[in-house]
Length: 132
Image (cartoon, rainbow, N blue to C red; front, side):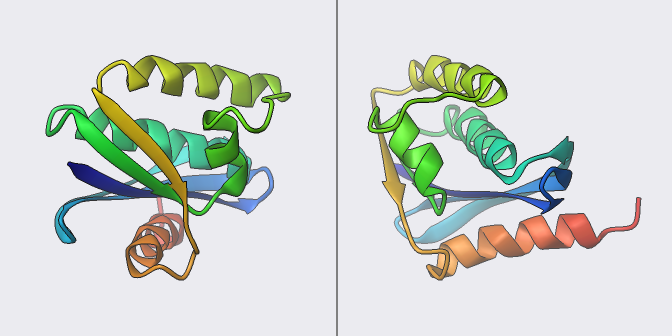
């Protein structure tokens, strides 16, 4: 089973945004990924990070646990919160399509202070700090 920690952030809300992803198996990091994603809100960046994590992970394993520090995104994907924002709905739908690549998928809300979540957050900030 693969585990992902994904994070998205924006400086300004909306503002310049980036994503950071950690892929791991049994607490061993197998991939780190980050990129700028243009101008976005924090919630849009969180969804974009998760989508990229799913795209990267689907070639590695068919069972996945996705750790996110965004309670909103996790609760929406668990069906506990409605998706009211049109832009988030598009990303929600894309995420649901990607779920079909997996035999088992679990979304877990975790503390932003989790060590792997902090690594994903560091990737976001490194990306946002890069000049051009």
